[in-house]
Image 1 (tube, rainbow, N blue to C red):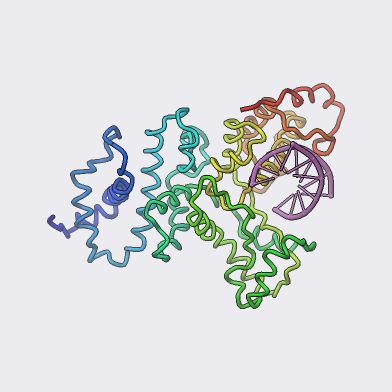
Image 2 (cartoon, rainbow, N blue to C red; image 1 turned 180 degrees about the vertical axis):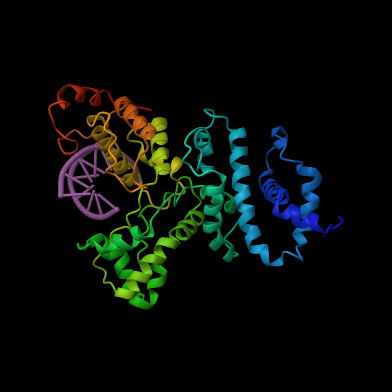
Length: 370
DNA sequence: CTTAGGG
DNA sequence: CCCTAAG
């Protein structure tokens, strides 16, 4: 292979070359049992890419970028993979099998949502999140790495105000036995403040979702994912030398994208299959336990009903941009709500006003099974 | 372990 | 979010 070390190499690195790189490496790792010949032409995979990669990968010039290259690889791998995945598993065909591809199990993301962060979003996302990955050399069967990056398709941050994280722990007074025994203790034992930068505040959900993930991968990933918020937490904690009194999981604002995934999940699995939804649609979301998801759905329903009672009144009370739920999503929520009622029977939620008497019937329909 | 419900 | 009770 002739290393063409002129502009071409650089160009291809910065441009198409990257794509090819990511793709080719992806292919290397994934072509083990597969015949990708049916895949669409990914821009001269064979012709220029291998060459450029061969040349480019030497990277005398780009030595310093190697780290980033890894990320980039991941990023592109993720994209290529997702597109591949969509080709391999067209829509309805495979359900669980796709689970590992996550992010966009049914290719839903593509159709919907001007909101869901497209490529750009994912890129910033991934680069942010895979970065820590590159540092730990061992723990990546490249296989898993790719899967990770797939997961990082997750739209973690749409618009997460950092203040959210900082503020959230402040308002927690109660101490909880469970939490105390879990997190706080470990922290104390590990000599309190000094340690705090590592483990404080991370309360792993008790059961790692083992079904669809290969343990180490997801865990490390979630750590990475939490990194940002964790840092916030740590800083605040060490600064104030917070005691273990407040141990509430950081309240993370639900992004529109997440909400949409939730809606998707429900429309695919039905209400009540929250573990399934979690696994498929929120597999990469380290937080968002099935319970969280259910709670969110509960809230969404509430919101939708509220909205429908305000008939037409575009209520802008939810001023925070992150919170406001787009109308279309709200509509879908309503549809789903009428489709399969959420089983909360008691009076608790929802406004009980006069108009509810008849209309409530639609909520109390039969529960749809899957 | 999962869900439903309630706080 | 958290917690608990129930399958």
